[in-house]
Length: 186
Image 1: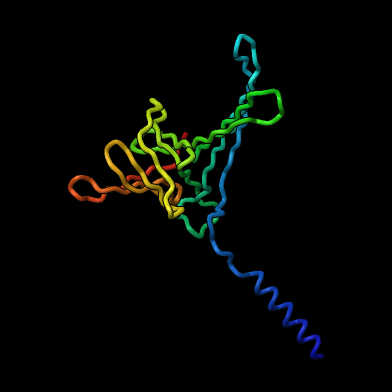
Image 2 (image 1 turned 30 degrees about the vertical axis):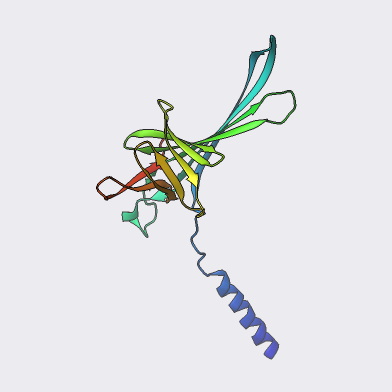
């Protein structure tokens, strides 16, 4: 009889452990669309035609959210937050089956303008998408979450939080200025 009670208690304990609520992490539900395009182009190099292969992999991610005013109801209407768009460009310069170089672009928006975040060896540079003009350089710092930001007008820090890139700096009057770049809706 003791064995049956022990087995029943064990099963009940294991069942209760399975019902615990999981910790909410950054692994939220997302819509994700990946489009890959490959092009073969002919380029004249040193008097001969050489084939080069270029593959562009575009990833669009958007969090799945419902209207918070309908919290706790069934069939709440969906709201559409900003979409993060990333492009990875692979280039194959020779005849082997491997790509020789890759470059990744991520787009963010601020005040109706779209900015490209291009990775570099020391961090990344921020450029305006339309003019392709470099506006700022963000370099790695000792703190992995913070970047040292330098523009022609000011120096400050930048960090990623909740799908946004946030810039903080002080103006000439000593006022803290905070700018937020949202994930791009491209």
